[in-house]
Image (cartoon, rainbow, N blue to C red; front, side, top):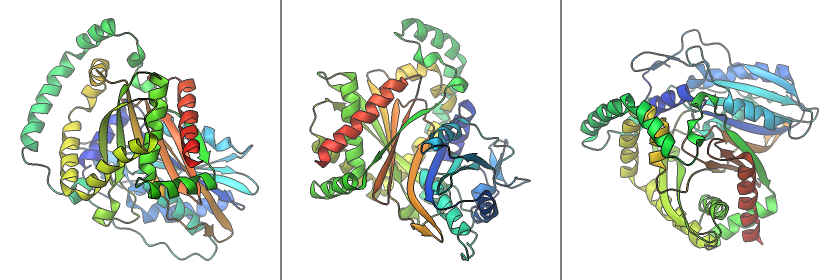
Length: 432
């Protein structure tokens, strides 16, 4: 693994220097999981995925290397109760990685007698959420008695190289953006002071390195999950659209029960199928942002279809990926500027809330691994500084696991709990 970071990786590299930007995937496992068994399987998984063997050299531009990268670390803690794993996930999404040393992933075994949780935490720079699901699946395969040898995968180029060239004119625009960003950074201290005097609150004044992402966990039962999937097909919508609509309604209600709210919701879109990257570990997602005016009493399924339609179009449209690449290249030149409090306030002018949505869908993973069974998969992560709250979901074995990831400077924990509960209430009402 020896290459320059791609544009998306470079954006995340800059973001992670401001605050942790991690993903944590949790596998709930039944059966006896010993520490020795996990430790024996981890080197197999590390050899299989090149990015699990990488560190980052702080050159210009930064690049991946495999020089003297240690083995994947494992922490083992007792499973004192059914929710012991939640504290470990909170730790994983808020604990930074040493990129210069590597590796940029680590594991936790929350060990019980008959039920355990395996947590894979990793820097978002090296992988999307599906990557962690595949790695935990590979770990369970390697732990199964008499399992076949897992083949080692070849290192892939940066995601943007698969997309192809950016849109015409991107280079010229990048030059203009770089110069403008440098100028604005120089005057940012004065602009920060001015915006702070004009602002009605000081939530954006918290230093980035003092901010901890929070999350609220919910799990929908199998009958409700299956009912919602059936209704999505009947109503010509999708679970992604339905989850986004429920989140929008819950957030709109928390803002005002009578007036409409102006909200953005950004959806993560999986692009693996387009490029044939299969189950490799890496970044293979794009994003699509909707600007919407929403009332708390909007009709759920109408809102769900409004969210679904442009996402379907974006997945089919090759120009969407080229536009994404151009946008990412410009973003890499403005990360430090975007972190300035005055710029964050300007970004939110006219907006009541900024939301995110990442749904992994129904995971195509085996349930049995020798004497072990995979019973569920949870997905959590750090929150980018501009989002108030992000809904992260995964479906496995008829269970829908949802994490509501929130940004404490922008949202209080009790408000995140309220939005999580109301979102699930909206889904339960739809399933009746």
